[in-house]
Amino acid sequence: MHTGTRRTPLPLTRRIRRALLPCIATIIIATLAGCGSSGSLSQHDPNCKYSLKKRKTYITCISPGTATPTRCPLPVTVSGTLIDRFFISINNALGIRYRYGGTTTEGFDCSGLVMHLFRETFQMQLPRTAAEQSSLGSTIPKNRLKPGDLVFFSTEGKVIDHVGIVLDNNRFAHAATRGGVTISKLSERYYDQRYACAARIIMKK
Image 1: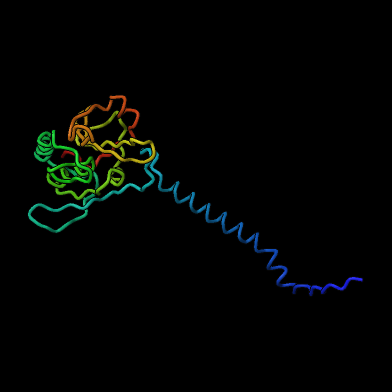
Image 2: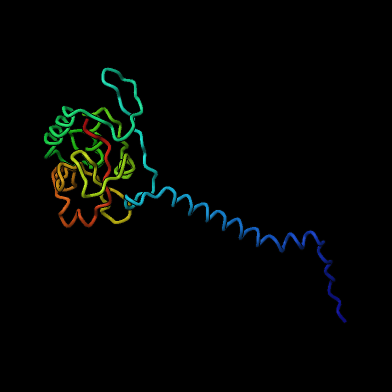
């Protein structure tokens, strides 16, 4: 004879709720995953390897004769005189030692050099890191580079972590961990294999 306690059946509404919970959870997870994938795809720039950020079409500039910042559409149109001054500044920076986190002539890292030169010559406020700088302006095919364009690399093959300034169709200036501010060739095996993309943020009038 069975003497155990007899279980009272759950109310119908509670049984329905318990049965539906796994289905609801599955739907929610699938929906969230779908939104995540959609968001990543919409932000991916197919022309810039490793970049998952939307491109920025404006940058902060300081107008000559005033300290008031303004938003300048990219690429910023600059005079030939400023372009010449820009490349003179690059030439004067050659040989300055590499310094991690450096943004002054006491020592530069790669993005610090770019940020310094654009600020001093064009009064443009660039982001601090190479990854952030890679989202500026329009991406440019490698075979259409012009002096002043920025070229980006991924030294580890995961994210953009190095930047340089194009001098001509094959040479670029950058702050290298060995040798400081120097000039290298895009065709060098090391840089060719790690090349990610290029962006144009200045344009001669």
